[in-house]
Image (cartoon, rainbow, N blue to C red; front, side, top):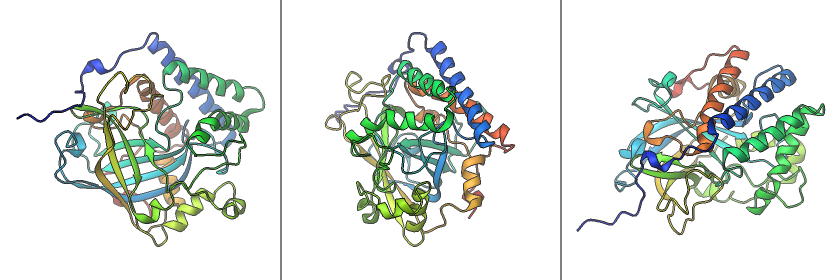
Length: 369
């Protein structure tokens, strides 16, 4: 008897090019580039157009589970193997803002030792693969039309003469209600609600990606008890008051001085393109229709997470791009298609202005201590 498989097979038809997609995408990227230039003029240093501020650059390992069922043993996860990884924790804004501001947090993962041709032509021979995740399950501006509205709003604020801090504040307030709805901030619309502990959060790909023969979203959630107990835990106000600009860096550094932590990566496979759409990143896929299923474990051992050398390497030398991947894990949907051009444009500008080469590591030993 053949086992029933409810999962949607990946084909080229799961994506649909949107009306005026090329024109809208160009407007978004051009606007981002102009804001990048403004930020360079402010800091005299080029920063990322999103997730500009890092809080920790960690060394770890990704262990693919053995004996995964066939629907999970796909692409990178097709066989049990352990890879070294570099992980960058960050805040979502494209400017350097105080840690106390409400904001999405990011977890960018670079896996080292991944063989096979990669999707981006200029990095096709690299032995790395990236996954980018945020501590929220969807993209609030889930289509390029909505994203363009937000981006143009940010740019208009940046050009208003009240400039940089107001850009960050507008962005923070704009997502405040979304954050509050899921407990990532309070409901006061104050810019002093940093949310729960950054190491206790669950992080999501938000948008869909190809998962070998299937279509999926992925997440990473705490696995070891010491980070499970941080889930939803508010950060002590005494810690915040000591340094409202950098307390997230401090709590990560303090934690990993003498602790090991593990997280679990899982995949949520699409079972119905109507209720689990690819082209609208703002729709949360219902877990009662398709739960997240574990595929790998991430482990971090005690280390110095934010030495000056490590910060420079993570912020100025490395790039993270969701399209730097095996073709089996290509991001899907219009919001991700525009991100492909946006990430590459931003990365080229940042490396050029900072006179830093773009390096894809061949060994974890390249990460400074």
